[in-house]
Image (cartoon, rainbow, N blue to C red; front, side):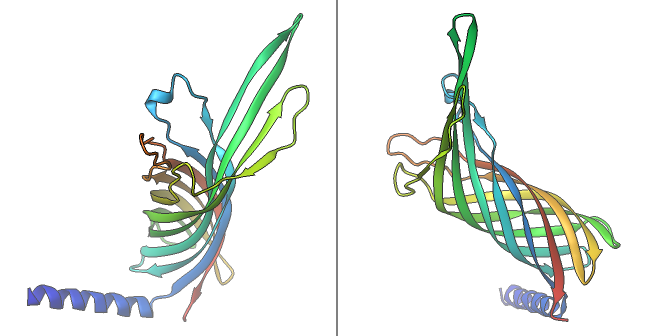
Length: 230
């Protein structure tokens, strides 16, 4: 037991020394997230189709090298998740049909803390890399944006979501995977990346039924990072 304890202390000390002497990167990214939700199978036959809901995303992050190609990237991010219900039908009037429809976008804004491993797949001024890790998020607020369409399209109507009602679960724990491309630009690096986020937390916790509705999302971002400390 003592040997294991001392080995753990030595490993932690080595990691701290490596981190202190490494060129830590600080950076930011901004882009768009296309949110969706999983749909319970028993709702397939009598519920509308859930579509992607576009919204903003952005983050500040640190990148701490562990080796030449592997680093850890903790982030503080903002992301809008949700889904869209878009339904319509045609109303027959004489010899022609009048298209009528309604669209409702459920938009929830989260503050998240992802912790990701970044693996560079090659060396050089232009690098391809992979991202993998997990995130914990908290829903700050949300809204339902609805509009109707016919001969004319109505202006959107926004209704704030009461996050404390309907058994809404503000916490969201998820896994993240992604690919990116970075290139040296001035004192730092410019990068573009795409991510997939797979939520594990049920979004609604009702008294008599547990709906397996979980967040999903695909995002694309651009950003810039540069070294600090040296």
